[in-house]
Amino acid sequence: MNASDFAIDVRGVTKKFGARTVVNDIAMQVRPGEIYGFLGPNGSGKTTFLRMLCGLLTPDGGSGQCLGLDFRRESGEIKKRVGYMTQKFSFYEDLTIEENLDFIARLYSMTERKAAVQKSLERLGMVERRKQLAGTLSGGWKQRLALAACLIHEPQLLLLDEPTAGVDPKARRDFWEEIHKLAADGLTVLITTHYMDEASRCHRLAYIAYGNLLASGTVEEVVKAGGLTTWEISGENLFALADKIRGLPGVEQVVAFGTTLHVSGRDAEKLRASVTPFQTNAHRWEKIESGLEDVFISLMETSKDNFS
Image (cartoon, rainbow, N blue to C red; front, side):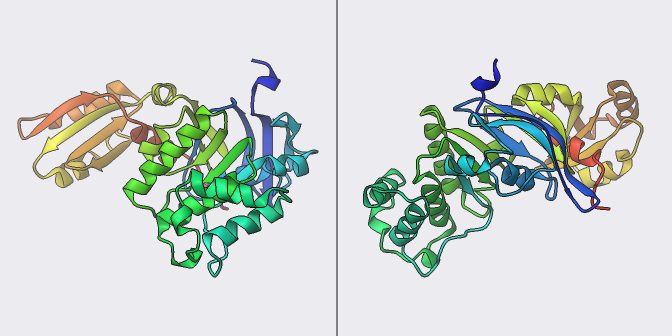
């Protein structure tokens, strides 16, 4: 594909705060209409990367385009075409839903503000709540208001920073249905999340840890590249068993998954040799396909913190 075929096409993106490199030489290509998941532990540089893409932070290095514009030299124009939903609810709690949306429309100097506000209210089912103060909304409705505000100026790119944190399962499901509708209409979405079920709903994803891009691709590609062998164990006294096998050669992680344990490692032979003595009738052992969460835990545990 040519550079013009991507909504985001950047390389070498770097940001330092003092001596600490928080985003280190990252490249990313996102197609128009794609939902691209951006994952990683807290403090990994995800939010910093988003802010550089939309012109809120100046990168120390890197080149490329965002929406066909130079992401460093034309950041002002990019801002007009991007909707950015921050982690923290950032609207006026003593204004109504309608007043908050009208305020955002004013910020974008929209000439048909009334029509734009009405369209936003209707699109996200907020007409009946238009006079409700934002400060009295539940987490799910605050999320809906924030999304409406991001979309009011009809952006080409939506940047969502952990948008479903703290909302109930139904609100999360409704939110993702709306995101997929928007993507089907051609809107490009870059979303950060810690939820593995949400990551699985993305078309492609990337994993960043402490400033470094460690994996990218479809869910299947990322899992395959992880190279993990995983055993699932069920039975009694799993906690005691976990203590016995944790730290053995080839055993990189022992993690509780509901009423089972997942034991994983990248050296299949070392792992097999270590767990074979424990494969008795006391527990049921089954070799399974490694999941996305298994891979991400492995990546996280093998990453070096860049705080110091």
